[in-house]
Length: 174
Image (cartoon, rainbow, N blue to C red; front, top):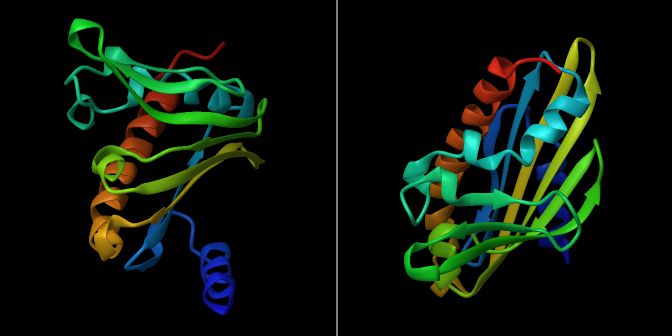
């Protein structure tokens, strides 16, 4: 219990930007955040436009157009594969329109490691726009090597949040 409380305190005090805020043999926590000069509702709706900002190099199919994410409880962050195949990367488990999307699942190679993850995407109103924070916490078996996955997952999620930011600020205002 003590380690869990220390982990929560570390996560809560992590600086804005990017960081592996905690890692160990069976899990890790990562936080990325970006400030955007767009209204919070625009920042929120862009989260569901995954094919427009997720890097194709971090897909199984090699094509971001095969990604989808329905911003509704029970929605799927999924990817279509050839021959009718597919992957459920994460399941949308909580939606607070305009504010928050919570998903559960294992990303990338964690899928094969007996690991489960929680991604919490929060949109906050700040002066001049919105702040989007992505927290990803993953834990499980990972053959005792979760800490080795942490910097790799941090790098990939950091790239995705940067692509998201670029997409949102270049997207025509509605």
